[in-house]
Length: 121
Image (cartoon, rainbow, N blue to C red; front, side, top):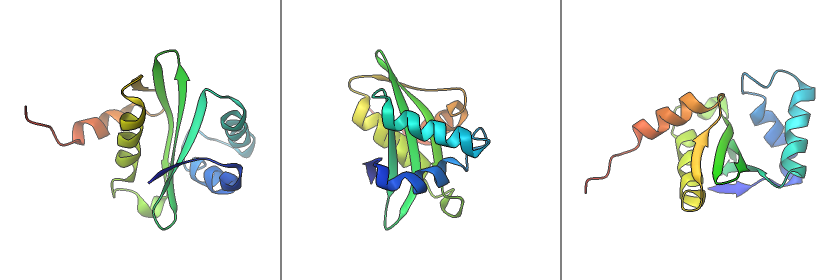
């Protein structure tokens, strides 16, 4: 289940975001979290089952929602959590916005879209 980030989840979110290769140090990580907390166009969500297993961050730019951060706890990777988070973002925002990825998440988002079951019309 996708839940909105709250300050009480800060350490968990920072831990998950730290698994992303482009997040290189603590100062950068703190800056990212601060941006999610203060910029109304940046939204961070967490994937919760029994525990919080992943995070996905988006930013709204005009009519676009840009997926800019996707991270899953390494011990739970390859179980579809990242794909489920992207699908929830598409379900929640796709009616109002064009969903796209930034440079850091593009290859993963494309991979998730190609793995989605095709619907027959």
